[in-house]
Length: 68
Image (cartoon, rainbow, N blue to C red; front, side, top):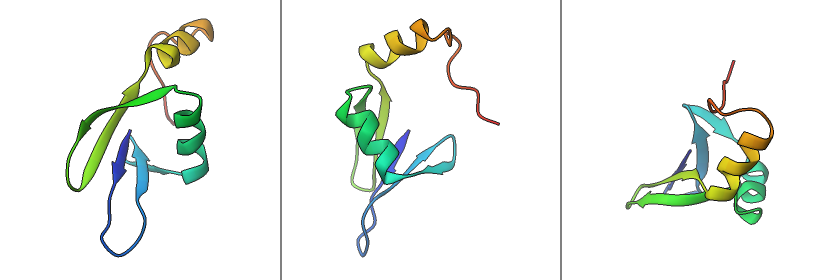
């Protein structure tokens, strides 16, 4: 998951090249299911936190997210 910064507008978020809603991203962040992995000037990369990994495992999704 990547947060892209834009100088003239607010950031936007993508997962596997697809845009995510700000509300979804903020909810994942608020629930501490994601955490920043790398940060740069134009983008920040996020990964699943330990809590996010545990939640996926509990849901039976040990192979990660499969997007259509």
